[in-house]
Every structure is written in structure tokens, then in C-alpha cells.
Length: 168
Image (cartoon, rainbow, N blue to C red):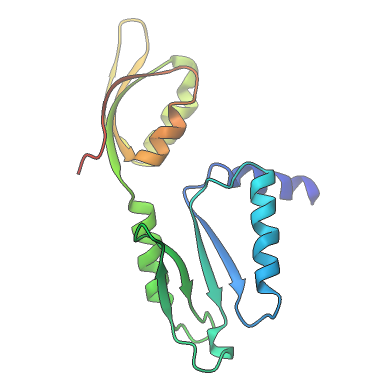
């Protein structure tokens, strides 16, 4: 069980977005938020985008569904009731907005030894075109969220041949 939990935590670092679901009706929710943020920091996931989802607003008199944005205008908190469905549409819109992010087009030269990465790029529908070079490398034209591209840049066996940030 502990091993499975550790594997889940390790995958958290690679997530595109974390939904931090908080029991809004619980008196100690600010303390629980700090604990989760501490664990995320310990595992190196503090930079993964996060959306706080305050659930159980049906137990809070006068609390309506609400989307709150940070100073940059991005969603950071949504108030919902999973029980009644209030605010769920707003939550879905916030998740879509955060996942859309800024897109970027790249030309990647991927070593044959990185076939697993190539497979992941195809599975995510990022690959628009592929050629195989004379030396067996994959030349992939991809379109992907800029955040995902930033992760790929850190991998060995991948050379960025061309980049166009902010492509629409």
C-alpha cells in the first residue's frame, strides 16, 4: 500500500494540473491546505499548477458557487457542491482553461532510445508529422502545451530543432 502511494506521489510531479479538493465545511481546512502544500513541496511538485476545489458548499449557508482568479487572471479556486452539482460546470470550465495553456510548435529530434517518449507524444495527440532521419532518429513536428514542452527539454536523447512559442 505504501509503495502504491509513493508511486502516486511520484506521478504528481509530472501532472499538468492538480485538483486539490478541500472540505469547505470542515473547521480545520486551512490547516489541511498547509499540510498538502508541505507534502507537495517535499516531493518537488510545488510548481505543478493547482486548482483548489472547495467542496460541500451545500453545508455552508449563503455560500454560492464561485470561481476565484489570481492576480494574473487565472483560475485558482472554485467553490462547488458535488452533492447538489452546484458549481460543477464552473469547475469544468476552470480545468479546461488551465489545461489549455499557451501552445507551442516544435520540431524535435528524438533518439531511437527514446521510443517511449515518442509513444507518449503520439498517445497525447501532440505529433503532427514524423520523419525518420538517415541515422534513425525521429524528427517530430509537435504541437503541445508550453508547460509540457518545458518538461521535455530536460530529457536526454531529445534535441530541439525548432521552436515557436505562443503559436495559436
